[in-house]
Image 1 (tube, rainbow, N blue to C red):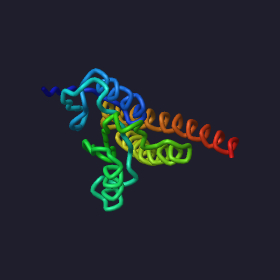
Image 2 (image 1 turned 30 degrees about the vertical axis):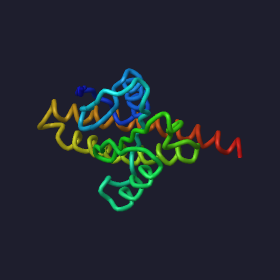
Image 3 (image 1 turned 180 degrees about the vertical axis):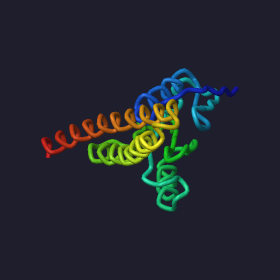
Image 4 (image 1 turned 45 degrees about the horizontal axis):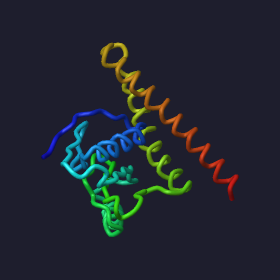
Length: 172
């Protein structure tokens, strides 16, 4: 049996999204496809799969991204799907724990990738908002709020990244 769930996760909520996908797998629903606010699941044994998601530095069709996806698949994971630069993998839990990013350096790099994706979007929305303020009041307001939120959340991820960097320096 299959089911589709429509659910919105913001770019900065990637950990929350991954946790929810793994909770669904624990309930017997393995992720089988993804799209914009769309998650498709197929029935499985509860806890049969673990799910990981990651933002790539490039589009999934980029040769470097294709090489990385193939590498993860060679490690026993299944590429479930992609959306923009996010890739979703699942792996059977009887193969052991499944983590794509297991060390501080990897987490720092991943947070940097997400921050560098969010910053231009935030600045672009603020720019659009300021250019259209006098002619498109409501649309300008939406762009301004979205730009502000993107920059605020990018700053929060930056602070998280700096904390991880400090921990890394402390333990080296």
